[in-house]
Amino acid sequence: MSELDEARKQRILVCLAYVQDDLTGFHAQFGMRLLEWSEGKAKVALDVTPAVANPFGMLHGGMVATLIDHAGTIAILTADRDTRPGVTTDLNITYFLPTPRGDTALAEASVLRAGRTLAMVNVDVRRASDGKLVAQGRMTKYQG
Image 1: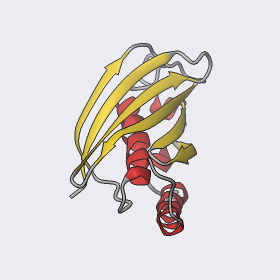
Image 2 (image 1 turned 180 degrees about the vertical axis):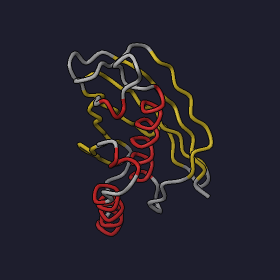
Image 3 (image 1 turned 90 degrees about the horizontal axis):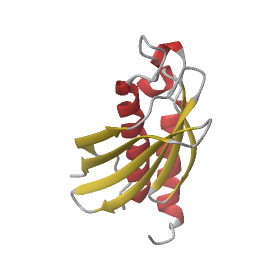
Image 4 (image 1 turned 45 degrees about the vertical axis):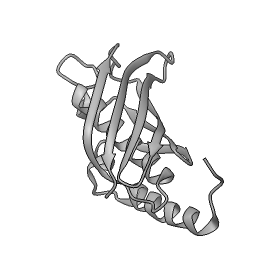
């Protein structure tokens, strides 16, 4: 991908500031934190607390899906020439391992393609404690 021009970089920063500062938003309610980003990439963390755990003390699969969607959206937003977050049209997730309460899930998103109408992203979710892959998602967003 090309180096970001200053105007586009400023648009991305405004969007990311909104995502981070929206303390009443869905993602903030569960403690998702944007750790880093670059063009077409994003890394988001989620601590496994009782609020996001299933009855067995593991990160709930629905929260893994939400984490994948959130990290993927940020990555797409940074890759899209018009800084559009898009609308999710397809989300496919494969779960490999659980993430227990007290650990942190780290989602690393990488855009596969960002076109005029569609964008695709791959997201790996790993446990912070040992780096093992716990889930992998692929998402498509409509950018129209």
